[in-house]
Image (cartoon, rainbow, N blue to C red; front, side, top):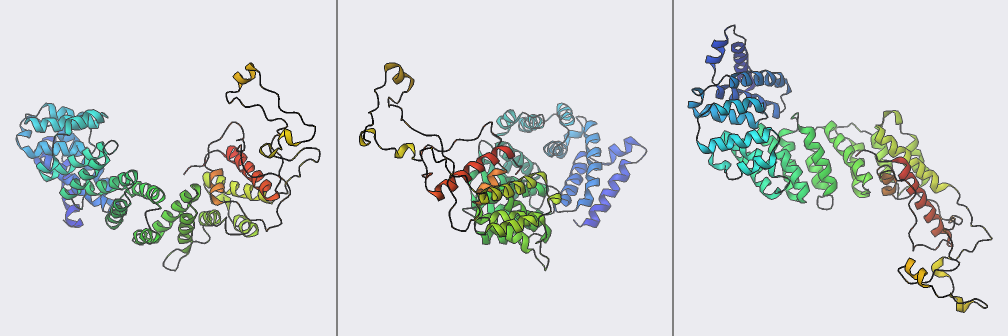
Length: 465
């Protein structure tokens, strides 16, 4: 049906609804006709016709009012009862559905479907799936079966993801090119991520972008897509990712790559973050995004291990923090703080303190005049379940020694991202019991840097992903 024909039909419906005689409006259109008109409008919206959204709102009012007035005679036509169920599974008013069902005289299977739909609408998913589980959507008329498959697939997605994906495929098979297929594809993307099924994720994402990129619900797809790319980065090639995003318009492609670059940087996935940041900066159709502060920030994070401090500082100084979100400002501040800590001169160890690590202390028997450790008493052994004597002369952590003469480079990008993503702690984390020898200047500088990163982590708090 063309858009012009659809608009004329809906205009006629609105004219009927506005007729001064309420009885005329009720008699003019059957419930199944109103619900079918609502479905046509919703399908246009799923395809990207946002101008149809006001018509949807008006049609929902009309359908609800008409179904509230239904009686036993209306449901002698089975199409009207199926329309009631479809309206309910489309997110209709649960009170309207429950009231209309109570007036209908229908067979046991239809009543079971109605009971499951009411449970679904009233937020009782366990009860809904128990009621609907025995009913095969493929045995029902196409319009009803498609919605039932979609509802069952959505309900089972948490506990039975494989069965849910099969049901969502049935929904698409029964109702291609509709809002049902749009919703089924969108849900399939999310389930494939939880299943770790990269092939299914890539296929469903490709199909969604091809058909429903301009749906008003596409933002939900974008959330699942970005999460999936990050979670399945080892199984999805960059070429495949580029193939999928190439079907998007330049602005949507840029936003997707910026979101991927940010999430990948936060998770320490340098290769993915570098790729996504570069694609976001590169742009398309002769328009680049190199002046976008987000692209500059994520590119700086992703190249932090390969550039000198001067290069990184230059990139960070170009970023206009006033154009960043609060979360991205935290990332920027963390990157600057860590870069500053790396170049700060480390303190030298006090000359009057021993610098040997406790693990490297010579045995007492090897030191002239030293006494052997005293045996532990029974009380000491009870306090120390290891049964080992305490290490005499063990020292607290030593301050870092002088920095290496090598050109200083920035820490790993994962550390920068972690500084903006970890939750705030009550006290600094202690250093590992065994690690680099702090008497070595390079090892000592590394220990100090890691200690500073921990402090920044705790001070920053979590940055939203």
